[in-house]
Length: 128
Picture 1 (spheres, rainbow, N blue to C red):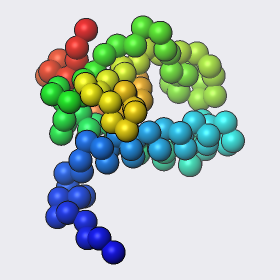
Picture 2 (picture 1 turned 120 degrees about the vertical axis):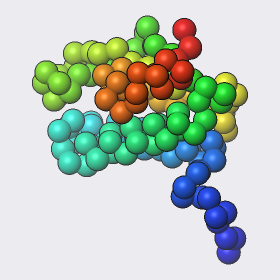
Picture 3 (picture 1 turned 90 degrees about the vertical axis):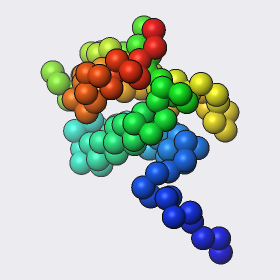
């Protein structure tokens, strides 16, 4: 059995965080389909994904990952109707180099980024 590095929980590697975010994102999407947007499981997974994305940005942006507004995708809005398919603008968390074949760490609604990140962090982490 291999031992984990001392900083495993406090400062996870870029690879760890990206793998975690991708797995949580898939689980969150499945939960939305199975039990709906407002179910406890779905909300918990969405919140866990957001927290992991914020950690990724604070530890590794802008050198290894950056925010970019995704002009193509819109997230179903949870503000108006928790199960509606209306959209809101998103940031993509873009990796400068792929990690295990992954080029991004999912989407983050701009509204959520503004809630969890300071204005200066968003400015520093964003690339147009």
